[in-house]
Image (cartoon, rainbow, N blue to C red; front, side):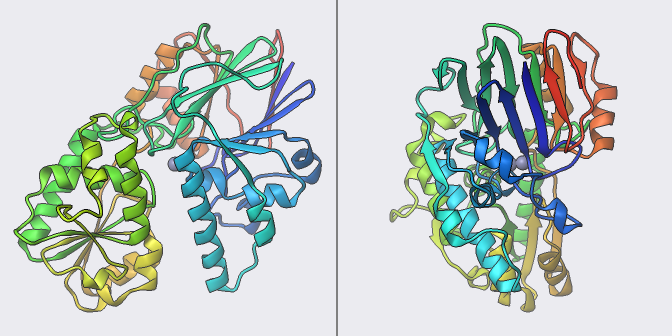
Length: 418
Ligand SMILES: [Zn+2]
Ligand SMILES: [Zn+2]
């Protein structure tokens, strides 16, 4: 019997945290927070001391806050096992820990854990060359992972446990123009697939969305605006950077400006061509920091000259806000929005939010399901109404959709129980 509990991330967007229990094994997939939770109690997943002490391994799909930022809290509750992730997810997660701590300090709010708990998170890098290969965790559990197309280190996981195959999609995109997706090679159809449904039944082509963003950018540059992209540390930032470098002609002597943290995260991609859809894209990232690179560094968005482009995190735009007052800025976000930054941008400059896919569209969901053919499917990472709309538009096929809320569990036996 395998029991799967949704401690967060089911019927809601954020705090992804799934617990697998089978005999002596207690494993966890992701341990994140809900950054924009309305109630304090909804920020962290439903963790308790008894569970935390039993977990032997956490499998992290990628670095984003909604998948990692509750790890120090898990440690504070008594977890002392290993946290498995790719090397870049580990580096980025540590950055996210720092950012979250700084933010709490700025706001004078308390974290639920100490800096010591944070430093005790026992990361262990998985071998990135061993994708799509079964790895034995112990004599009852095997697992495999593969690239999920969401960030440079993002993966899906499959587990073989007590004769059943379970699949966790992680956040994924099969249409990213930069990050490649590896189809899971499974010998048998999974008993259960836990799938990313962040966009519900939304459908559009990534190529088309990038085209729109580039048109917006060209227009703003023509109007001699300082174009600032608000981006996260990992994923979107590198895909947008690659698109800008490929499609926008920079004037002689012009640069693309980035804050140091983003520049460093991007540079690392240069050594990881296997994660990219086109290996040639790696050379752009590899060149960062060299004399002929079009990428320059600044911590202050106001330093980006009008007619040029900058990439900054929401935190930096909030903190160094001189860019807002001079009226030259056109702020572009591909979501999620930051209300403070938006307000500042609209006060003196211009602002626009454009769609950009980092999660699966309806067509991608349908494609992956028809490839995997899971007996049962649970959609996560989305509000209930969005998940329901998705289920209604998908063909029934051979899979059975289970509607689960955070706090609920499913038991996988010969005959299923919810
Ligand atoms: Zn993500
Ligand atoms: Zn996510």
